[in-house]
Image (cartoon, rainbow, N blue to C red; front, side, top):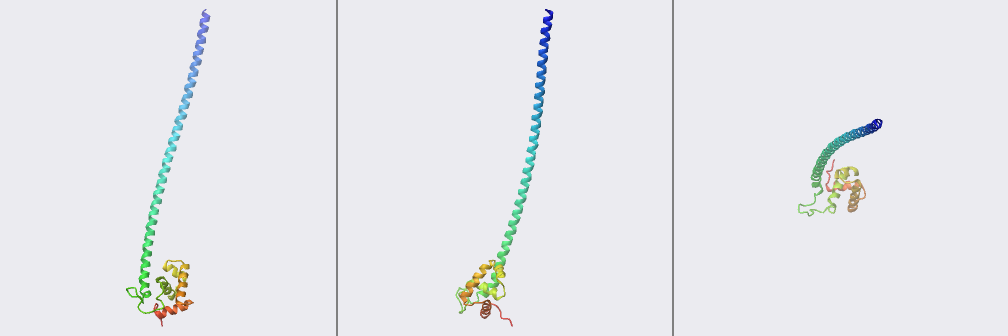
Length: 181
């Protein structure tokens, strides 16, 4: 019987040792899983930090683009103000010669072949008489060359003049440009 007891104890001990080894393996597995989860968490933290840095960089770039856009807007406004000012100067310079026969109340003083012309046609006539070409007139008046050609055609039809030298002679005769000797 002693042998049976010893055999039963040995079997019990063996079973307990096996159970302890199994629990140890489970504990080691859980430890490895915990380490893996910790590494994953660190990786996610690093990725989040990288995304945060990228977001800051994008914000800085957006602020820079906004500043550049504001600077371009200011430049455009300045250019527009200059263009308006230059246009006003051009009108101030040209208008007295164009409106020579028109009185302040808007009526025509003496009869002139220029009376039926619009202000734009008078501007075109004056610039042609001064020797400007179509492209130059377009740049001065801030219109396309095609628009200048259209106004010149209407001007010539209205005055019944069929060439540029005829327009220049008419402008000289009407006193739009001074006669040079």
